[in-house]
Image (cartoon, helix red, strand yellow):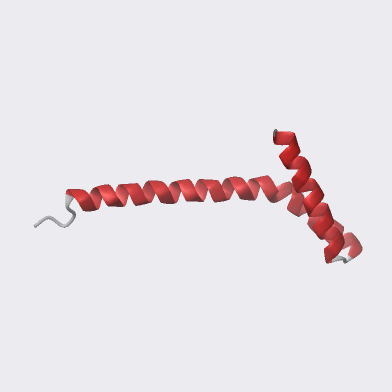
Length: 69
């Protein structure tokens, strides 16, 4: 009896491909929100307010979405 049957190998390959796709999607989302996060951190450092940092994050994220379309 082989260590890995053909079905096990096919299942493994499918799961590896799904894992790679998920990692790529997460990386894409992180790079998408990176500018908004940087601006939010800068606003938070200057103002000390989480509210204004959140507002800055939302504005930059919205502008990024509108720019892509």
